[in-house]
Length: 479
Image 1 (tube, one colour):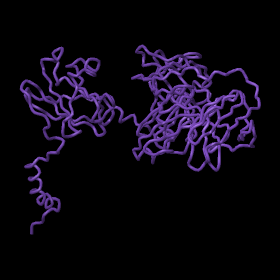
Image 2: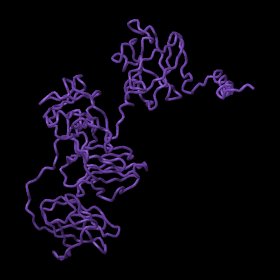
Image 3: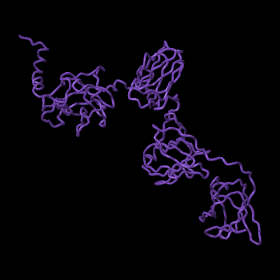
């Protein structure tokens, strides 16, 4: 009796399926043509790596077009994203534009303006040689962008070599390097070294430079530069006996306090306060009046240093921002000084403002240069004296109050104060409001605190006043 080997039997069973696979090739959606052919052009349809931004700019680079220096930034070598997918990009190439007799067969790769040059899955340089004929197309797979291999790692997983310089890079440089001189050129000759890596700590992304255990205790001057391309920041002196946290701006280096990391509740209004005011409040009115509190509004939430500039900030509240409310912003000192409608917006962004005593201007935190504090002029001290406001009350109101605002809320919060006494002068009875005068400028409002009120007049507390209060207006009485 003939016996079948079990492996032979299994192969016989698989033959129909194997034949089926060889007959029908599987085509993925990303491989489908997305661009029309053009006579006289070679068409590359490129399947880009996952995570490529639709707004990115991608270029083809090779000997045929002079390399990165000539290709990156040149629209002639820029890929176009397919209209119906973010995965497929294409480029039409005219061999007549190729240089030095080179072709695609001599090698090429792709470059992302956002994420760097293309790399293989093993993080090595890419060399493609696929090329179609004239009037033809071919698919090319771009593997990874360089930034894929530079993702921040868990700080606890890093074994540093010596002390570390952590950098928040707001310099604007495209290619950051660090040179050091002093006790030694610890990073070698100019322009120094690139960052050792990237790390995220407490929500802040740092580039970091390991300084080397052998260099511990050395005193060096750090020079951050654009990798030797003509730009550099001023010397920053350190002694390598600790880790350093530094923030780079276009104008210099500032020590960064990692404990200064702020998590905001919604968007925020940031204020460089050069007003000279003793207090600062933010009041909002618009779709909702008294949003975040009645007058004078909300107090400062906290302070934060950005690009070396210290801001007072007001968190607007995530729930308010999500509601899409349009609000008017009034900055004030809670005591008679204010800048109206500093900004009117839908609470849909952070706002940065420089506040002076009589103006407020929106600023860009990336380019703002701090100015001088603009305090109010300090007048010569005026000796305090006793004065009286005499009011002949012809309003018919059952109660009578004076509220004052200006240099201060002299009679306290609303509705103000009632008369301390009455007195008779030339047969006329007056309500008496005593004041301690030193030249305060106050705006008087008369009210019965029961729905009736009007603006009376502005006075200066440097003399007595005799006022006739009618039902809807007031006038000074001639002496």
